[in-house]
Length: 73
Image 1 (cartoon, one colour):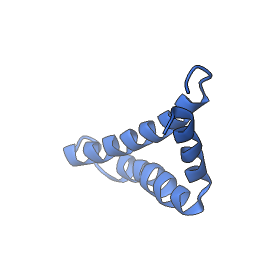
Image 2 (cartoon, rainbow, N blue to C red; image 1 turned 120 degrees about the vertical axis):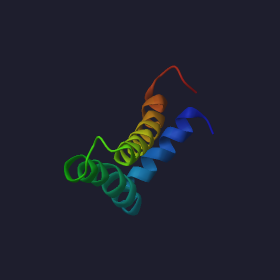
Image 3 (cartoon, rainbow, N blue to C red; image 1 turned 60 degrees about the vertical axis):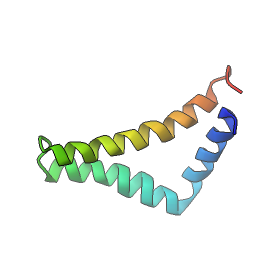
Image 4 (cartoon, one colour; image 1 turned 30 degrees about the horizontal axis):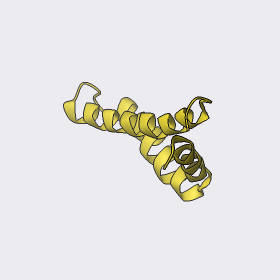
């Protein structure tokens, strides 16, 4: 898959209500809120959970932004 094809696929996933609800809302957004507000952010386990969400967010949205650059195929 080219970068633009990956970007298009990621954008289609965002449009999918189940994906948006489970991954974007529940896992990333609600998870960040829950772990930062309700738990001890100094805990190594909580930091691992926050890092996991950050990795997923950066990977997924990195695909989209890479495909929007005019210099990639």
